[in-house]
Amino acid sequence: MSLRTLPLLFINLGGEMLYILDQRLRAQNIPPDKAKKVMNDIITTMFNKKFMEELFKPQELYSKKALRTVFDRLAHASIMRLNQASMDKLYDLMTMAFKYQVLLCPRPKDILLVTFNHMDAIKEFIRDSPSILNQVDETFRQLIDMYNCLPAGEFQLIRQTLLIFFQDMHIRVSIFLKDKVQNSNGRFVLPTSGPVPWGTEVPGLIRIFSLKGEEVKRVEFQNGGNYVSPLREGSYDLFGDRVVKLGTNMYSVSRSVETHMSGTLKSSASHTKENVAPNPLAKEELNLLAQLMGGMELKKPSSADHIFRLNLFTNDEEEEQAALTRPEEFSYKVINIEASEDLERNKALSRIMGEFRSEETLVQSTSKGDDLLALMDGL
Image 1: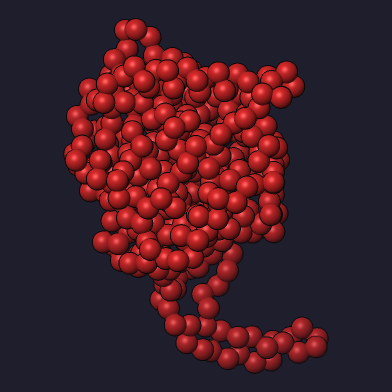
Image 2: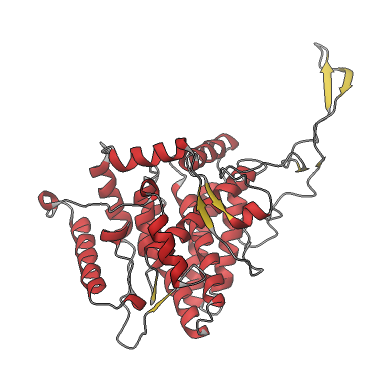
């Protein structure tokens, strides 16, 4: 398992989240000034310097619940609010999109090109906000410094770590189903054609060498696919052509996107186990989570800001039905932080608990139309 996986996982999931939110903000005709504020606030929070410092520390991946907690907070870093069903759908789309990208990467190092595609898109979202753009560029440079020098074996470990994280997630997404890249059981269909990884040759030829290293024989065989050589390698610089299209915006053309739970026994069992079985490292993980989220400096909406609710479904009825029909084992339950004995030793966790409580109070005082996603009630 690679300890350098978390920044790539977080940034790629964050990039997918921004694609989806941008598409939905446009679809629901949210005023441009409000939509811009939402994107700017989320990106500002996402690339906060202290937050990134914690993120880039070598560490194991958080559990799915812990990571979901971070993205719940991130999605509500502005005046936009999502209720439980919409947040579930948002997270499902984010995770399945990035899982597909990891599976399709021609070589492990191309995960970095996917990340750079997301970073390029994020920069485009805030191109008119120089101060935020500087924050994003600083993280971009950190990515280049940390990952460009890593050997191929480390990228293979990163890819394996990501695939282990996603292995039991088989959520059907309408876009993938319509494009026939996902089966009805939620598993992806991998192509047997297309460009081969950079630095490799199209399969179909076996060379046999003598003990002296001289080629003595060639044998051709049918490779079973329609492979081509890549034209060039993608750029790993701050600017450049990434060549790889994975990680670009698949929502740029307006398309209806739905998610459905696949009923695979393996997936259900794994989620049930995660919900029920106590994690022996839960306390340590919460401490790490507290440090990570402690850097996520959220700005509370001012009295002049008008909070609005974003619905990722066609209408409120669909959203309510999705919340009722979502299987119990796929729901993200509350992460109960019980740290009364550690308040003095863990000030960061204490501060986060206080923020959670203040959000709970706000939830109780809002109407259904402006309903907050209560992190401590609705994960």
